Image 1 (cartoon, rainbow, N blue to C red):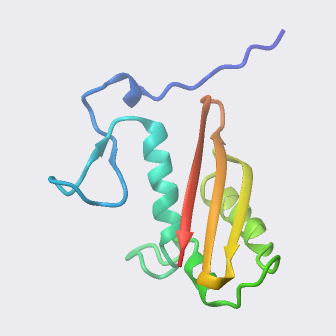
Image 2 (image 1 turned 90 degrees about the horizontal axis):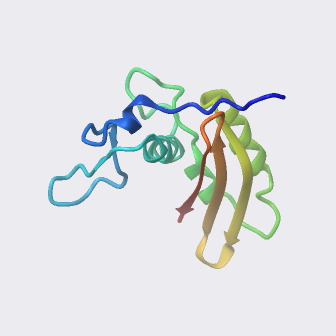
Length: 135
C-alpha cells in the first residue's frame, strides 16, 4: 500500500518567524507580515500576475503580462485563450503548483476581466483560491 508523504515547510512550524508580506502593501507598518507558506505562495502568485514582463529589474522575463488583455476588445467568449495562457505560465514558473480550475469572467460594459484561480501545491495539502480583477 502506498503512503502519500506530505511536505511540511519548516517555517510553518516557527510561528514567530515571518516568511513574507501580504499584498497589497498597506497598513500602519506598510508591510503586513505573513507567517504561513500558504499565504506566501498566494502573494507570490499575485505578484507574478500583476507584473508585466520587463518591469522587474534583473529578471526581465518575470511577469504574466495579463494587464494587456484589458485593452483588447472584450466580448463574451473571446477571452478563452487566457485560461490556457495562465496554465502554461504557472507550469513554467511555478512547477509545484497544480491548477485545479481557471474561470475568466468578463464584464464588457466596464472593460473588466476577473480571473478566478483554484490551485493546490504538490505534496503539501495546500489548496487555495485567488481572484484578480483587471479594469
